[in-house]
Length: 191
Image 1: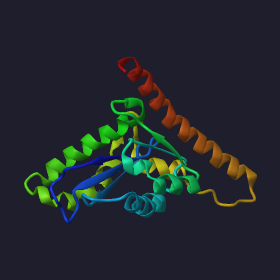
Image 2: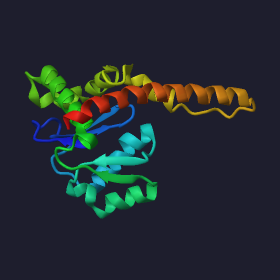
Image 3: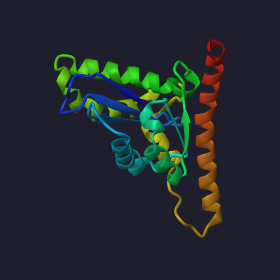
Image 4: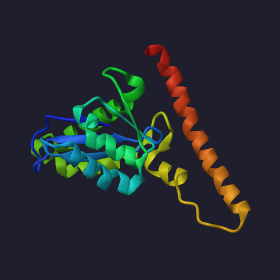
């Protein structure tokens, strides 16, 4: 999780909250007003993220004071989510969010460059664009990855069908994790 701040006011918003799934690289872009609290973030997180993707097992965020608030920590303690905090210039934990931020800023610059106060109208399309692009480290179109990995199993009396479905999910997970591991190995000497 990260914030893109100091944007031109657009429909009362000046901040974009960028939330990226670490496995699938699926991203959500949430417009926020310039002044917001941990309570507003918690509500928006439940509305925008948990509603669509469920409750995450872990969250990596920067060390913003909002993420250290009692409300934020208590919410995720009750939900069973482990909170991990990154440090500045630590690409192992927050590098992919920075890449998504750059992609989003470039997209918004291209599509709202002549009307910088209208970036909010392009935000949902930017999210769609990013999530339907083929990710270079995954070699998958991100939008279709969660459907295959996290589809809900229907209750079946046929154990063979459940085993086949589980095997398919395992293969998808291997196909996702192998390129990611390769990319991490390639980036490790650079750190």
